[in-house]
Length: 231
Image 1 (tube, rainbow, N blue to C red):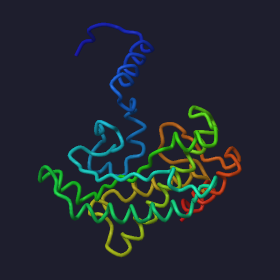
Image 2 (image 1 turned 135 degrees about the vertical axis):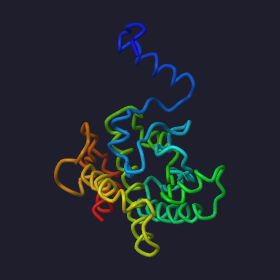
Image 3 (image 1 turned 135 degrees about the horizontal axis):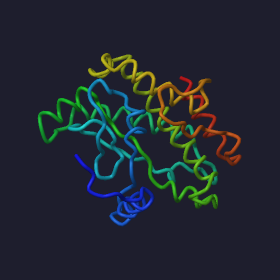
Image 4 (image 1 turned 90 degrees about the vertical axis):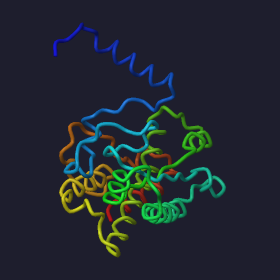
């Protein structure tokens, strides 16, 4: 097809971002970045997300979601990292069980969901946690705390998933996607600082967990996240 007109890239990008903000969408996803982190590309390309964008995966898939409230894991002024990791393990197991128990809106979605056993463990109240410590939301420190907490949740879920697979077998789509899935898991460990070396197969570099940039009270969270990622 021939182009209809020429527009300035900066103006177009600004319009896309403003439209996302005005409609309360979470923002714009980059197709190359999303597919760099795709666990199962042998089953197709990621072309979109659900409306809230917490589920970025193949079309015609279902995902049961759960969210942990960061604010519930404070003991006085300290964050209970071990308690949070324990809760993340329980949530991962429960969400995996729900895949087998859930009803899905179509046969195709049901089949894909069982073949991939997709689950979504997330968190809430990050803003409240940062405000407790007077950490600006849009700051290097705020992003580092977010990285440590996200890494702890994600790494715990991965380890728990591997333990489930050890007992029940991997999800049916795993073998045909083994190389890609293990590459993505390794890249998570590299960016967490648990494995040395450069990330593999990424079109651009990404944020690396830096314990030195964490406030003192949050370094234990970062250390546990890194330790878990090394598993």
